Picture 1 (cartoon, rainbow, N blue to C red):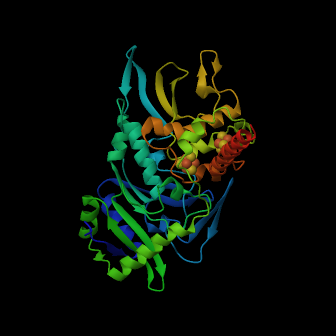
Picture 2 (tube, rainbow, N blue to C red):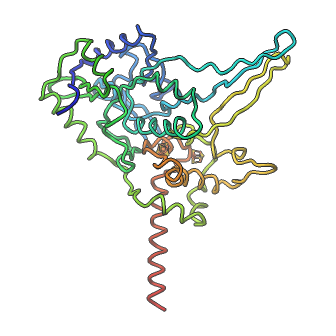
Picture 3 (spheres, helix red, strand yellow):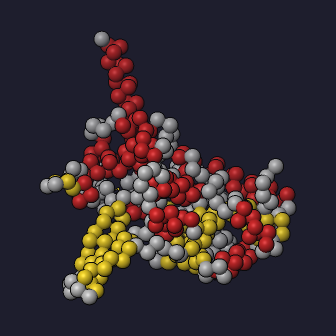
Length: 385
Ligand code: SF4
Ligand code: SF4
């Protein structure tokens, strides 16, 4: 028997949940249309969601298109991810100010901002759980991340229609939301109407749904919602077998194929900026021209820059191929040795937002082909000796 009941919400009734949190000091962060894309930003109400919009994606391409309905969540993922709230792109760690002839250090002010994340996809929850391990596991933890994470309430949404670049089915991280949420929504648009089925995933989620007076969903409504979200698995256009990818990439460091798969790469770092799991960062000290203050700032960084691997007098990864190899091998292989899982959740952002359309899935397939050719060649060779 299910631990929690499911509730029926008319689309505009999401505002009741937003208002509940707003009166308790939370900000609502959700998808909204801005600069011709669906981005994550602070929103006020259901009207700020991308009502009636969808996104059409391909390698190196992203377009917004009107839908022929008023779906709230009828798109997949855009250039932003939730890491911008939990692991901000720029963060001041401490500041020093000259006061009465001495410098006074002002320590990092941990964010007390509380956020409700609205419309979090299954792949994105997996990405958050991965970053929880990076910033919250092991000997050294990031208190700033942990504080923001503790203060986040997650309203997830099941994907009804994967995008062209989505491959979460292959990474085992979607399309259905199974864990890590406070409330999960399934959006239904059918002959019976346009509604949301809301299922709690935490005691707080249950408490809120019950206290706001939503009615319990009927068995028929729950079945209809399950059918919509279960059918999503049959709609994937991008799939790849990743069962041997960890070993495969580690045994292909010297494969000349790295030159070919990275020959168009501009080392622009877009793929790492949009990736919801990439966590590399640098620390810079900045002083003002008057000498009155200085600060230490943490900024997102990328393994695609030359400076990233700079060690006393030179960069370790000088060529583009070596940087692309580092990124792809870390994502899909050595990350597993480090954190116990691969670092890719199949969201497809790096494919969409790569200006030259380099496709990580197609590249895995090229390495598989190369391995196969090698094996066939070997057995042919043995057969002839
Ligand atoms: S590597 Fe690409 S597909 Fe995988 S999680 Fe990062 S952006 Fe998404
Ligand atoms: S793979 Fe694409 S997005 Fe990533 S650094 Fe190269 S050109 Fe930029």
